[in-house]
Image (cartoon, rainbow over all chains, first blue to last red; front, side):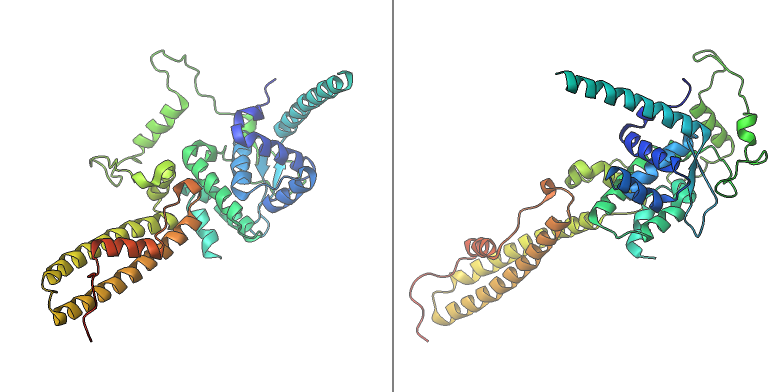
Length: 106
Length: 251
C-alpha cells in the first residue's frame, strides 16, 4: 500500500480523517468543514487544529486547494486522498466489526 | 479586521502566513473568538513554528473551479516528477533533502547578513515563565509577547517598589521615633506614620488588583500568584513601622 498513513500525523490524525470525510461529500472551505464535521461527529474543530491538519493533508497530496471565493479557499479530495480515506475507513470498519463481535459473544 | 484576530494570525511564522494567512483570517472572521478558539490558534501557531516543514507544500497551482478535473497544464508535477539521482545514505555524495535545501539556500546567500550574525547567542530565559518558557521564547522570537507575561513583569517591578517604600518609611520613622517622647514630636510622628501608611496601603491595593487580573489571565492555575489582601499589607506595614503604644498625648 503506497497511500500515506494518517497515523503519522500524531494529534492531527483524527482531525485529518474528519476533514477527508467532510471533503468526500464535495469541496468545502474552512468554515464549511468545521460546520459539516460538527454535524457528522459532534466535534467542533478549532481554527488552529483545522489548519494544522489542512497543511499536513495538502503536503501529503491528499487534498488540494481550489481558487478562493471571496478570500475563503475551498479544498477538495485528490485521488490519493480518496484512496487513503477508503483505506482508513476499511481499517476502522474491521476494528468496529471485531469489537462488536466480541461484545456480542461475551 | 478585529485586532485580536490579526494578532492571532501574527503568531504564525511568516511563511505559513504567506500561504494560509488570508483564508485563515477569513475563517476567524466567521466565528466568535472564545478563549478555546484563542488557545487552539496558539497551539496551532506553536505547532507551525515547531514543524516549519508542514508549509513546504508541493507548490500546486490552485485548480480553476470546483468540479473540474485538473487539466494537463495544471498538473505537470505529478506526470513528470523531477528525479534527483538516487544516492545511498552514508556514501560520499549523498545528501539528504534537508541538507540540499540548506545548501541551496546558503548558495543563494539567504543566510548572509542575517540579524545577529557573529554575535553570541542570547540564551537568557524568563524563569518565571515556567512551563511556558518555550512558548514564550517562540513568541518573543516572533516579536510578540503575551499580555499576562507583560503583566507579570509589571507586578515584579511593583513588588520591588512596594518593598522599597516600606524600607524608606521604616528608616525615616525610626529616626523620628527616638524624638517622640515630646508631645508635639509624637504628633508629628503619628501624622507622618499615617501618611506613609495610607500611601503604602494604596500602592498595595493597586498591586493586589494587578495580581487578581494576572490570575484571571494565566493559562494554568499553577501559574497563579499569591494575592496581597489589605489586612496582610496592613500587618506588614505595622510590623515595620509600629505605632507608639501608651496613652495618647492630651490634645
